[in-house]
Length: 338
Ligand code: ADP
Ligand code: MG
Image (cartoon, rainbow, N blue to C red; front, side):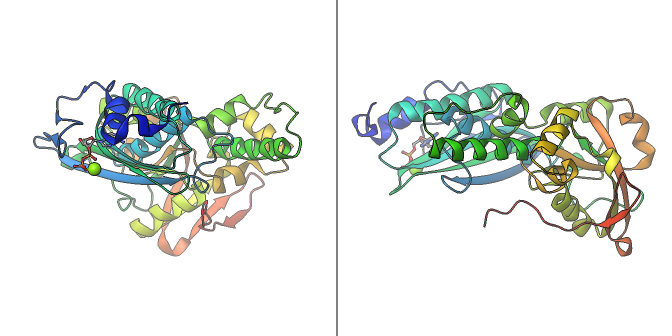
């Protein structure tokens, strides 16, 4: 264990950021000067920032630092993709208490580096400071987009189709399993965690991916969604955001909400309704978007994109048509940290 004080602040920054090659032609100046310099040419700049606090947003009892680094970057980039834009650079600011060694920070930056390589973004700056307790991690992502392709939450119209990528509910179940095993471990430290058959849901919780691939497909098939956001709080609260901002209602079909069969089984083992995990779970980082019905042929045969309903007039409210044929009024209950 190497105390961070042996390197000093500047030594630590240099050490942590040395193996971050610049890949983007727009990254004119990266780490090392007073500020980074980015060439954006004629494109609009899209910026988003996220702050993660130990004990509130992550629990190091079951989150390896490498995964924390990877996830922090991925969820940030997810916000940029959700604008139909491509992220190019990130800045990483960390506040750390003395319990973190150089090796621990290397693990964190390993995860950050893996994510940068996977998504092709450059680390171009940040800040490093001390904290009286725990760790706070703040990541800012910078992306770009042709002005006419930017996709906001407010563009959906009644009659537009609601689409969802990937599958929902797994990250929430992964969290339930990790929390359960943590509790057991605290009471019986001699027991090995029982994570059998839970690999997929745990990976979805610890190592989510941003849907860069979907945005690349949109470009290829020349589809511009009418509205889009990433599903971070749960489908129910996120569809509400689109409805509120677009001035519409929505009808979701339970049969159209993608939930993997093995995830459904695990939800039932936990005495949870699978659709509840998808509606209220959160942290799936899939994309929720709406399209003009005339574009339906463009996505009909695409794998991993599912049509899950239709936008309605605002007066019709936000409803779920269940498998049993009932209509439920949805509530905007997302994942709440407070
Ligand atoms: P200043 O004191 O002027 O804020 P710093 O010494 O904090 O400058 O930073 C020097 C350089 O290192 C800057 O380019 C900054 O963006 C970068 N940097 C600082 N901390 C980090 C970090 N944790 N990760 C990545 N880059 C960092
Ligand atoms: Mg600074």
